[in-house]
Image (tube, rainbow, N blue to C red; front, top):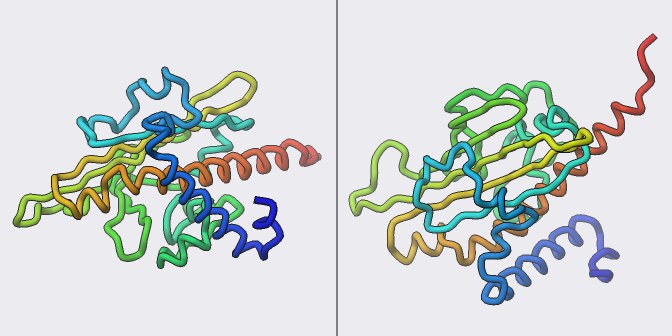
Length: 234
């Protein structure tokens, strides 16, 4: 992607995202389910996580993981402020905004966004039903639960539900394993398969979530380095 790197930043970022998404879509028949465990060990992929019971038999799921060279207390604030109209998603902002998401990725911890309570809405798009905070235990666990029809099912009995689960596991040497899991279930039908099914959502989700996790890693490590190098108060 050497040519892309010479483009203006926003254009280069969008071009990179589109190239990666296209590559992920085209490679899907060859990678099978392996991509759904990006960065995760076999044990992490198989382990129970808080929130699994909300979608007990998913049509498809993924578990991604990354090691961050910072304690989880320094990683958690970036997780806590995720969301549209909040801290953003630290991913491909320009592409998200081309889709009307109105995302602004912050590069600092916002104190007023750190308090999460059960039932709080976390939006992905201003015109889509928000996810809800189902479980929150700082600095370890955040479970978001989404269903387009939270109050009643439509007349035809269709449904679509999902979880977005975050776990911060302590690692030796003041390091953190950030583990993110998504579980998706939906009723039969072409529209549901198109909008909620593994294809094309899984390759798109992979590219965007991978970028988000790398962004969280960069921000948390930079914040940790900054705080570590600050002079002690006299």
